[in-house]
Length: 115
Image 1 (cartoon, rainbow, N blue to C red):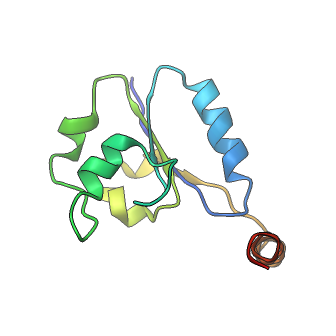
Image 2: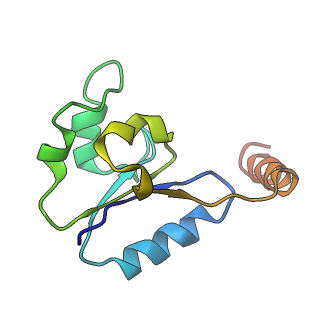
Image 3: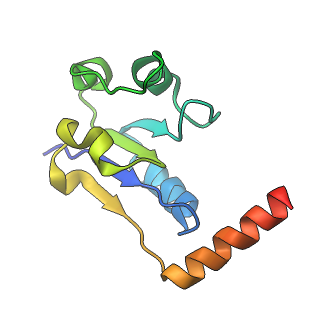
C-alpha cells in the first residue's frame, strides 16, 4: 500500500539530516519541498501552486496536480494545517527537541548569521 509522508521540519531539531535520510530511504516518492515562497529550496511546483498569488493558498485540486501515483514526500518549514486536508493524519511526522536546547541552538545560529 502506498504511503505519503509529510515531514514538518521544525528549525534546529536536526530536520535537515532527517530530510536527507528520508529522500535517500524513499527514492520512489515524489519529493516536494515547501520552505516558503522566497526559499531556493522550495520546489517549483509548490511555488507555482501555493505561492502564485498574493496570499499563499493550497488549491483544492492540489493532489490531482502533484500526485503522479508514486506517493509523495512533502517536507518543509510548514504547519500541519496547511496541507492537513490533502493527506491522511498518519502521514504527518516531525522531530522534537528539548525546548531549551533548541532555543540556544536557534540563538547561536541567528547570532552567527546576523550578528
